[in-house]
Length: 103
Image (cartoon, rainbow, N blue to C red; front, side):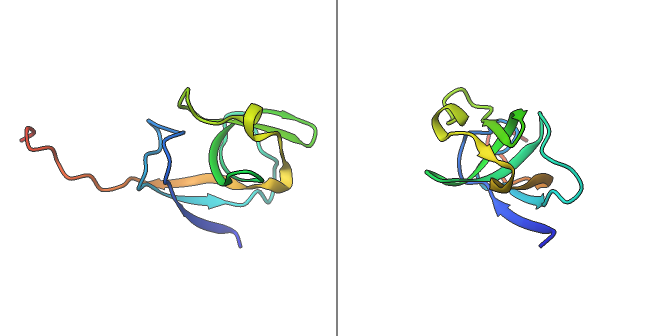
């Protein structure tokens, strides 16, 4: 499958991605993950995770969230290229009702 749709459920990538956002994720066909890519990976301990690539060293890919309290490769372990499901291609923001104090 070339493109997959995911729904953001956690806070680890706030403020860029928030719970309720939908992400269209593109599988890496022509290149490997690069530092700065936002990716969906499969963690052995936490299942699917949305993180930013912080380092690539051979077959090891290190991931980190944007939120200081989020899990990183230090706690999740390094990811292999095969554990990366793809790069975020498109974000569809969650709909938020306007606040009552805004006109």
